[in-house]
Length: 359
Image 1 (cartoon, rainbow, N blue to C red):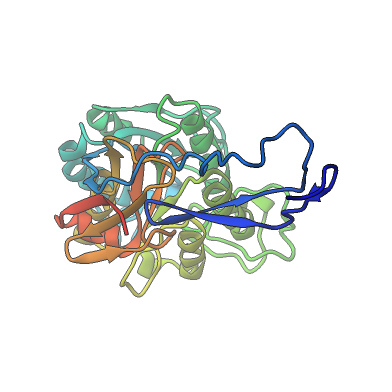
Image 2: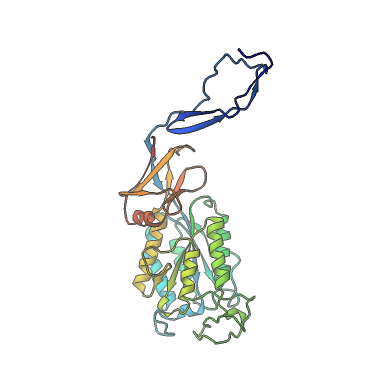
């Protein structure tokens, strides 16, 4: 027995308690012997919680929110080979491709759209709000936006901000969201650039000037790439970049950087962006993107607990729980999102399973 008044120093005792294969550490601080605590009574270990129960996690495809950011600059009047006034324009080809791709996903995606530049302002004007707020059943409304012919510059960065603000106000903003940028040229329309030193983009007639006649003709790559990176890293808002007539685009490297900054570059291709040099490639690119969006986000029934170990497989593939494989959307563990190769496999029909495992 210790003398009365002495101190029982259990300075760094660590008790390991098994809870479903996990280790729980409990640290005890020094306690005075006469602090009113019955040292002879063992209160037992702290409550370890309910035992681990292996089980399947039911997965139901979610309805992601997608905003199409559509370039309607003057060069969209050219054909895919770069010829002006040659018949079928890039604008018409894009409309025809979307007419094939969007209707099958009309009930699987909440879709919205914004065209840039604005149809009612100057060549570099951007609308203060989107043309269509996202909702299920919007496919036909998006296709009607192509009745207005292309005109003006390419204010990509500003259009991305408008699209992102619209998504932030939607009821589904907490769920999976994405932008799909379709463009045929390099971004410009930044009035703060110096035309005497900047790299000049083609004007509406396709001419590249050695010295830009105005700031609006300057290549606005830095601001646009920074915008895409900020949306992805700061707001968890990825952007799929589709480049029309890329083999005619002298700024193809800018499209590559934009796709990487957007956070969802194309896998297994020579370019990170989705290149569309003909109508079939454009339709294939849009089909692949919309399939990924519709097939790569799932609602998790019987949401796993915060300490449950969840294992996800896609077909025979064991998917890592990280930014390259799968992640929870938010902290509630009620919705998960596939990335990269796992998303590609799910989009082509591979079965997606999730289970809670116990060691």
